[in-house]
Length: 141
Image (cartoon, rainbow, N blue to C red; front, side):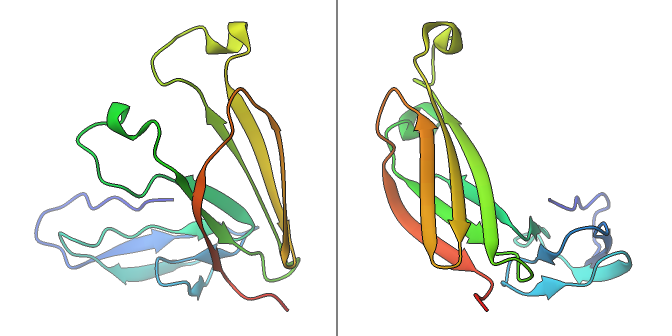
């Protein structure tokens, strides 16, 4: 979740993190939920938060376009739910240019589950997914 900065010249914004989930900030700290909190902002730091229990696949290499990163490996960012020691996410990948990949079955849809210290990948796959790194946030009990 990203908090927008809607006014120029401000150095903090009020953020509301919904009840029903725990949230991590960009520094791997669990945040309070169900209340407004003032968060510092700058031109280089826009507040963003990750729901505990989620897995976010990212392409980390900077490229001039998304087309240039099609073959880049993925980094998995795993945000462990401290109550359950679990995290789960999905990723959909295709060739990046066709509009009929689902009809042709020419795509990858993977579910990624982490429990305690193990990871499970299940997928409908047209190509093997390349992972470059796995980063875990939160602590296993």
